[in-house]
Image 1 (cartoon, one colour):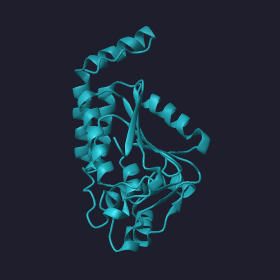
Image 2 (cartoon, rainbow, N blue to C red; image 1 turned 90 degrees about the vertical axis):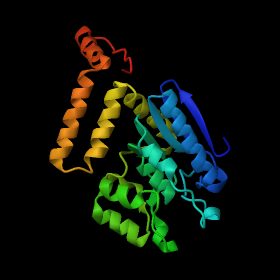
Image 3 (cartoon, rainbow, N blue to C red; image 1 turned 120 degrees about the vertical axis):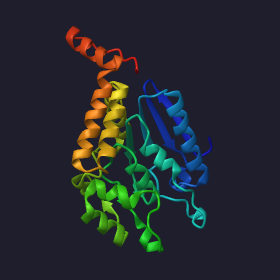
Image 4 (tube, rainbow, N blue to C red; image 1 turned 180 degrees about the vertical axis):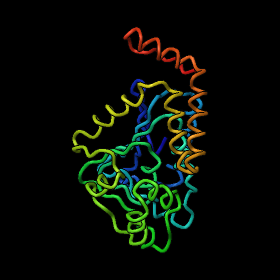
Length: 247
């Protein structure tokens, strides 16, 4: 792979955006390589959690401006958003434009206090096209989202954390270690339970409350039939770590 690299540390996968000389700007090659990797992770199920992080001092400055006239469609971001395993974005420097949209597609976001966040597309005569106009207001509310989208101005990490855009601020020299710790914690529950919990949260957001509660109930019943549910009960009663069977 030319623009990303992948590392597996036991149950945790690490996806590194690897164009530091371009501030990890996303071009068609990177988008394609990310999509290919994510499809392989779904098919082969080699990891229980995925961390997305940038090489160098910047997470991602967004779309590579050299491809401004013909940008990739953003399929890699949609695939990341629907990945069945928990995902963590480890952010430093800046998450701008498509870089922020990539981070918004993850479940958990950690950032250093110096990181800035922004969707500057309107200053270039366009709007975000990889989900930013939809995922940002669902996360931080329409007020702050409108401010960021309509002005194009970035916000700092402290405001991002106060608004819920970032789950936790971490010193720069602790970012990888903290991401590893969070990822391992996310990898410990039953895989199907984690998958269905994600489905309940994200699909439920698009439903009326009554329908969302029905979805939750249906997923709960499905999990009652799994071997891992029985293993979880046995492990609790026997006071030992569970041995998940992924079924």
